[in-house]
Image (cartoon, helix red, strand yellow):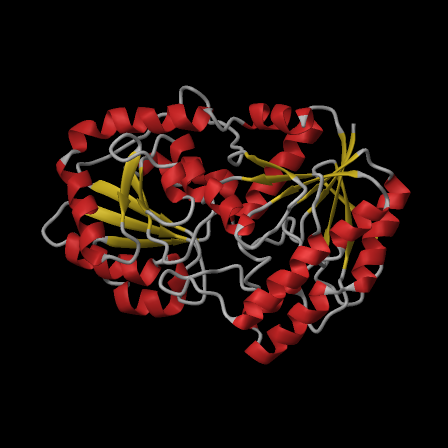
Length: 392
């Protein structure tokens, strides 16, 4: 089958777990013998017309969506520029025509769309105008809140977000099929009357399973914890470090921090000498299992924002690592309390401290929890995911 896959970012560009999920789907479809190609952005302002490249034997169409700056630079831009950028991105007609031309040239039988911010929200209109079957996968709340973030305690969306949601709801209309990795995210969009006439399904994100003989290697009696993600306040890294500083006193434990972000320099200056902490920097997704998860007992997900279906949980379970996660958004749909991890109240210091202490005091349960995590991960095998996807 000839399949087009569309996501605003594709390697080497990446912001979060959605890009990993998208890349894995592309790779698996190609492996299964399908004729696949990717439509994504270029960050080069002189490339406003599409051009073709190839990576890992995948044909990639790229172009620079005309705007004030590239989507890859959005986090470094002032607020007023981001506002104008979002308006242009929402109604980006040049992008609409670029996508339409590519689809007319390739004539795929199926188009799989993921995150479209940065590529233009008229993309689904281009697909619909050509009467091609479209399956759209949700990843976050970006169709209601342009930032893609809703922070705990700030759930009520302002007038600008409600107006933005009305516009994106009209632009997206109702794709033939909409997939959400979590019930929480699908319910969120239903509350804003999205996708009224779409067939809606909840299918957790896929993982490429580790081999059955994957084993953890612990060199001493230290219990190792992991933070993996963006070093940004909304991801809970500052909250976690404050809590862990208290938790680690007189205990044989250590926290590994993997990732990068705007807080990296400040956090290293403040905590760089702590003997219970190690900053490992950014590590590519394909190296995490061997370089990181091999030595980790528990991963910690301290998010202060509403998460859809965090990649950290999928990766952790895949490597037999129980997760101590904030009970926010779709997280409780993945973590079973005391079975493959622990849940705590997001942003609550005492709640997190209690679960950290509980994890340390109940290490006798670790082996079974680790096995339970791997069993859960098998439910998300990418082979099963692709089969479900192409059966729709």
